[in-house]
Length: 137
Image 1 (cartoon, rainbow, N blue to C red):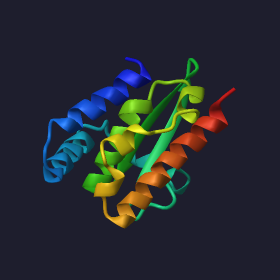
Image 2 (cartoon, rainbow, N blue to C red):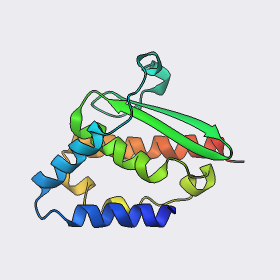
Image 3 (spheres, rainbow, N blue to C red):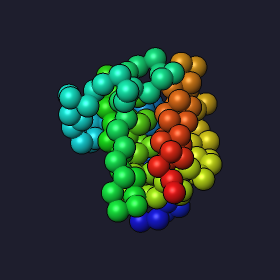
Image 4 (cartoon, rainbow, N blue to C red):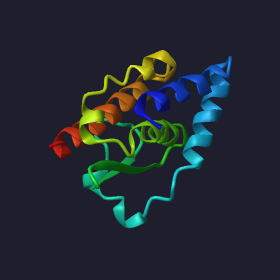
């Protein structure tokens, strides 16, 4: 699935719910579906700075593609990072670094989060982009 197809799927999935309460429940389900994150990877260098909750992000470059794994100690935040890595994991670093992440605005996520969670979302996006820039050719 291409990056655009992934983003369109997220937009479509969010459009299925009329209320933000239902969208939060969907985010929680996404977080629950994340692969288990090894305890030994929950290190300071993998923590995303700027998040109120603890969010760990790991990235591995394999065959020219960047693969992300993540975890958080907060259920909504875990869902948010799960949403982001479902779109960007398995793409080239250049595809990720050059992306505008505009689909986040299209689903209204940032506007429907508390200010601290919205800041955390921005930190997650910036961290993903920075990792991608560092790993690009």
